[in-house]
Length: 270
Ligand SMILES: [Zn+2]
Ligand SMILES: [Zn+2]
Image (cartoon, rainbow, N blue to C red; front, side, top):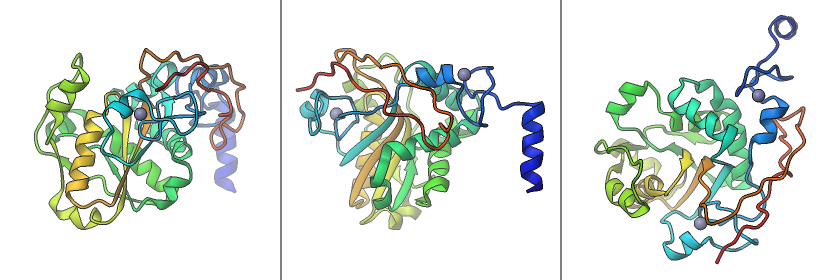
C-alpha cells in the first residue's frame, strides 16, 4: 500500500519514460503512443517453422519449403525494423537489460498456448570471450524474463559455444550455416534436462536461422523430444512486401497490447 503510494508520488515527480524515446508514458516499462504505432507485431498467417508472414494459414514459406529447418515450430513477436530493431539493439549493445521485461511479454504472446507444453527454456549461448566483453547474454536475459513470466524452467547454460565464431555480417545464408555448424553443443552437465523434453530456444533476432539450426541440432543430438524456437524479432525477406496498418495506441499495452493491428497485406508464399 505504502509502496503503491510512493510509486504514485514518484510517478508524479518523475513520470515514466517511454522505453524507446524521451516521451512520457502512462506506464513504466512501456512505449509512448507514437513508438507503439511503429512496432510491427507479427499477426496473421505465418510459416509454422519460422514465423515469416505467408498468404494464408497452413502455408510454409518458400525458404522453409526449400530447406526445412531442423526445429519443429517457431514463433516471432515482431518484424525487425523501426522501434523493434532499436529495442533489440539496445538490449544487445546498450546495456538495456531492463527492456527484457516488456520483451518477455511480447515473446509470451507470440508463443501463445504452446508455451504451456514447454519443459525447458534455453537461450542461444554466447562464447565466453564475447560474454566477458559484453558482460551479459541478451538472449539469456530474454529467456530468464520469459521464465519469470511463464513459470517454465530456464537453464541459461543448457547449451554452450564450443568455439568463438567471427561476425556473420555480409555472409550468405549458406555461408552462415557453414560457419556455425558444430559451434554449439549441449552442456554435458545439463544433458538430463534435454533428453525427452520439449525445449524452447529463445533468441533476440532471426535472420538466416543458422544459429538456431546449430542449437537445435545440438539439442537433437542430446535427445530433445521437441524443439520450438521463439524470437523477439525476425527479419522479413525483401521479396515479400510488408505494409503494416496503422494501429491504435493502447493504454494497457503492458499486458494487453493492441495487436489486432498489423497483418501482412500482400504476403506471398509458395
Ligand atoms: Zn516513445
Ligand atoms: Zn518459414
